[in-house]
Length: 468
Image 1: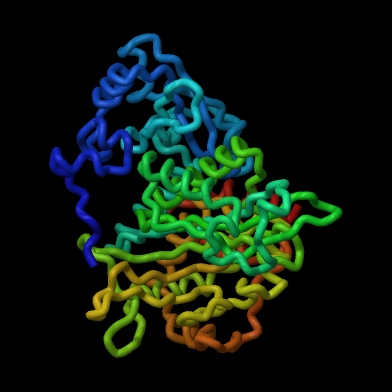
Image 2 (image 1 turned 135 degrees about the vertical axis):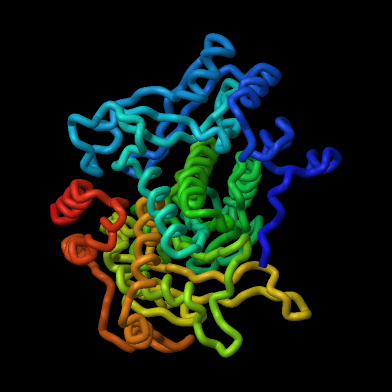
């Protein structure tokens, strides 16, 4: 299935574009130059420039400028600015002597900050060391390096989308809260209070250039009680398939938008794996779809067998899924979610349609003639809202490459397969403590360090933190 055209729209179609800058500059983001953004700032009387970037903790960081003139603005857009890498990437083992770094904007990521009190142009940045090369400890560098290696060694582009589940907490009266425990799935107003916020988030994301699939109310609903006077309501925003680096950025930007909207609405927004023990938690499932020659590849052949690329990915995920928890399940509540048995994977398995499997092949929507209307995907159901998406997708890219090389791939897939309704065929549970995750991560260091993607110093630091 071909992706939607990336060509610029005809002049008469530009008003229908969701992305604000695309519409106003009049050319695709991939073609933006510094002069385009300088002209936009001048014509729209934009007052501030915000350089945004991903820290070692996976959170969005910001460095703000009030450009003195067009030359100053152009210099920052093309050259970036220096920063203290030890404060940003200490958790990822950056050496003290390498703490001077440069943040350099990626112009194609620019958007108008929807929350700024003054008109503000925001741009995402990559990180570089003092020699001018990509900073090894930067999460942005990691996912880009892993994605580039994957393409070079397999001839495949791996695209991904995140399912971002979150809880909104609000103090509401009886007339405003109609939910019921575990009965929120696809509910609409007035039976949910977070619908307006969710729809506003979808519009903001589209205007920012973040590709979105849909949003809906989710199953989780937690009533107020004596210990917590808030009602907690679960929602989900599912993004659209993008190359791994863009998919990771999209998750962080979505969380940023939701937190901002919740704060302005007087609510709390939580991505924690558990809102309250005994209730449905929040996962952050990722769907993957390999592409070659601008076409998404089918995961299943006509005879029902898995195509090679699907085998490599599933083989990598079932082999290294436990280690990926270092990046995808970073909270103690992660273990509660996995152990209480509410459609969260408890064992290393894969299967078609099975929502208890660690790796699932979902159904593909088709029209009445049987034509697929969206790409088939392979879903990784282990991560949750504590995930660091850049590190996680970098690790999965490495696992995909390794899956292609496995001499015993057939045996691994057979051993971990389950039916649509079946349970795990092997007693191979997922880790439920950080030391267990550290052991799994230690065992797959050669896979993660292959190609120089994850550095030995970084792995030492992550493992030490897990054991601590």
